[in-house]
Length: 398
Ligand code: 3PG
Ligand code: MG
Image 1 (cartoon, rainbow, N blue to C red):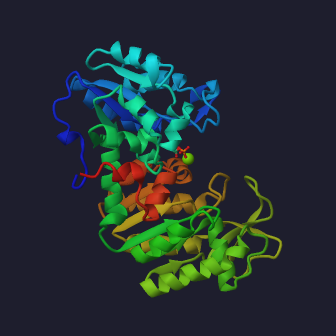
Image 2: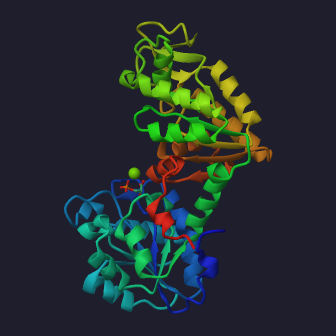
Image 3: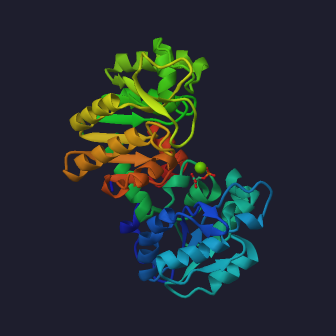
């Protein structure tokens, strides 16, 4: 991969201690991992390093501990889950620095795997503190970052270490960067973006960046309502950030200047309560009843979106088109996702999607496997789509 140091150039690592930053910030319930996608993603890097005879030492955070060690946020149960997914033994150390970590590292044989406790149990992690970074670096000869999804954080284990040790992108980081390059960095045109989700406020920078880069921007979900308000449509009791109507106008002006088409809903599925199976009606976007709320875009809108997908060579997607977590308001998201998957399978489309809700929606549509690339990153994917440099990626540049 041009521009980045990858495992292809890591050299002879037999007997070397390789510190690998991974993202094990996985969903848990009752002490069990409920979705191990992020663990699956890091397997190739771990196996490759271990099979080359390295001592593989995993660094990761879990949750957002406020005040030092918190047993609820221990990585210990995740070490067990990781061992199952990787299919090898994963040792665990109860601290990521100091005596405890040093002893666990010293006990490793070539090819062994060790997970160190939550890096965020130390304040120095999030502060990217020099002394803490040095304490981490003591346990390694080489640093590999395989955690794209944490690369928007300039923390000791995501950014700092790359200054202390020779640093390389792991295979998942590499795959992510390559996919993102295809999506927005250097995409085949025309490029269509679908952005949905509840709020404009969390995605202003994203929308401003996208209108300059893509040929068409489809806006769905609750955030479309704010654009409809800005345009003067009546949307009844629909969720909208009315105070952001001017921002929405500004985004539409920027789009017009850049020659980016903005595609807003032409119809909507309206309900009177936010719950699964709620009584609903499909109406034209200018006929939303005063007491109703739009919970999904309608079939005419889906048709228009699918036509844009047909015209696109590249699709980037973040955010659902409607309240996909409750039926039947998942219809539009499911239909557009399936259409994009079909075009991708036919070799007509490069499709890149990311963000927690988006991944859940694509899984629900059973098409995640059919997309060109689905990022497991939330915040990092957004910041990357916003065109912002990610500190953890910047330090891996050759
Ligand atoms: C994530 O889950 O998005 C990453 O692991 C980053 O976690 P954070 O938002 O707590 O930094
Ligand atoms: Mg997060």
